[in-house]
Each structure stands twice: as C-alpha cells, then as structure tokens.
Length: 364
Image (cartoon, rainbow, N blue to C red; front, top):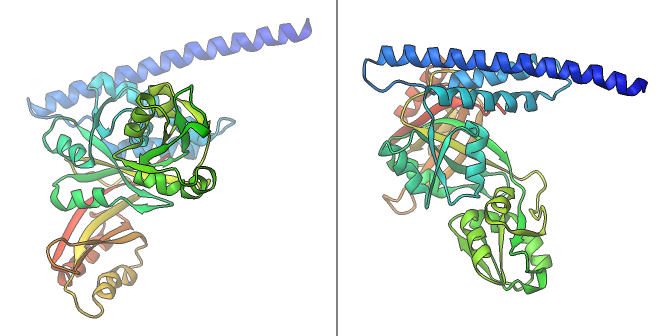
C-alpha cells in the first residue's frame, strides 16, 4: 500500500506539471501569433518572412547547452522542435517540397527539420523539387546532398549550377535500410531488389551475401521502390521505417546497410539569404582555368586565413571536355570578414564563382 501511496503522489505531481506545460505552450503560441501580426503589419501587403532558420538554430542550440537532464539534450531539442513547428503553423503553415513519393528518407529529413506541422509536397525528381521552390509553389524544400558511405549526390550539385536558390539549412539523418516486401513474401521468393542507386550501393555487401545473383533495379527514390514492392509480387525494396508505415510492407530483414553509422545529409533550400547564426557553414561552386596548380590556388586562401574546409568535391563542368567545377563547403558565414577575404581572393583565381549560401550547422 505504501508504494501505491507514493505512486499517487508522483502521478499528482505529473498531472500538475502537465497543466503547467500546457499553459506555457499556449503562452508561447500566443506570442507566435503576436509575432505574426507584427510581421504582417510591417510587410504592408508584401511577403512577410515568417521562418527564420538562424533563429531556430540558435534556440535549439541553447536548449541543448542549457539542458540540465535527465532528459537527453537532443531529445529535449526534438520536443521543442515540434512545439516550434506548431507555433509557426499559427503564423503561417510552411509548405516544404521533398523527393517523393511518400516514405522516402527525404520526407523523414523534412519532418526532422520542420516538424509535423509543415505541409509536405512530394516531387518525382530532384530537379522538380528545385523547380517547386523557384516557381514559389512552396516555401522551401529538402534535397539529399551527401551520404557517408556513397558520397555526394551529383544530381543535387548539378541543379545548383542552374538554380538561383540558396542553401538555408542542413539536416543530418541516420539511415537504417530494411529489405521490405509484401507480407506474404519470404526472402526465397524475391526475384528483384529495387531501390535508389545510393541505397543499393549502401547495402551492396549484404545483397551479395544474402541475395547473390538477384537482379537490382534502380529507382528514382526509395519511396518508388516501396511502391513497387507493394504492387508487384516477388519484388523487394530497400527503404526505411516511413515506407513500412506508408505502404504496409513487412521487413524481410532489418538494418541491412553495410556500415552501421550510415548517415545522409540533406540541404534545405529556399529563396532568401540567411543571416549568421553564430555556428554556420558556407557552400560555393567554383571553376578555374585548367593549368598546373589551379586547385592549389583555390585552396590556399582558406589555409592562409585558417578557415576549415568541411567538404570538397568535383563535378564535370558540362561546358568543355575534361574541365571541372569544384564544390567547396567550409566553416563560416559570407558576412564574416575572413570569409569576405577568401571570396575576394577566389575571384582572382577563378573563371566562375557561385556562392550557394551560408546556413546554420545542423542543430540536432
């Protein structure tokens, strides 16, 4: 009986805390509404800027830095992300494009970054995702850019060559691949495995060992692969938990990726530049004349100013045979004096220099 009495006291405390939480959450929502009213009045009929990536990143970092526990800091940040998502929807719901159909990792990345209150718009190709934002049919979008196992997503980099859009954020998503099929299928029934080319590459060793000789079909997305597994007998798909939920598929085998810490990084793209948040990255595309030491001349300004590169990759320029564009990502913001110095030096040694945007480092 003593334990029952103790539990009753704790449950009463929980009920009291829940009432306080509800009151505070709604107080925050009321503040969000006032912010919306002020922004709309200031815009005088123009487009009001409701979403501030740098402000959200600062809030989420502060939550993690000040979190006293016992709740892990990243979990506290995710809870606040959902509260922020709901409050922002009171100002104006965000529309966010992603590489569809539903059930893709791009959708999971969009939900992680924008929360459940965002309105998500699936698109068939990465080029279509860019076009959706360019045409103002949605506010922002999420596109895959890099996987820790398979490297850069070339289609995304190629789209940046032609697009006026800016990178306004990044999302890091742990990727856990499952082999999925209809509930009546077994591993012995599978005659085709389908998935995005990166997903197939990330599971190559497992497929070689467990389904040797079974053909592998490349799909535009893992969501499309899941659709095939749902609709076609003897077809298995490589996809994640969202696909299981959306297409009512069974897991023939779980976590089949060859590297346990497999992670995909996504860019959030939009039409506006983002002010500095205090912990930022910048991405650029650059091309130089084809001569000895050209790449060294592009990298030297970073070394001279002590700026750390976080990524460098090359892409065919598509304008001349055997000439290349370089994608460079580095720490800092375009408004920083050191970064301004780098950009000035790069202009002297390049035939094309295109800033793709400065944006907050992934906060969670």
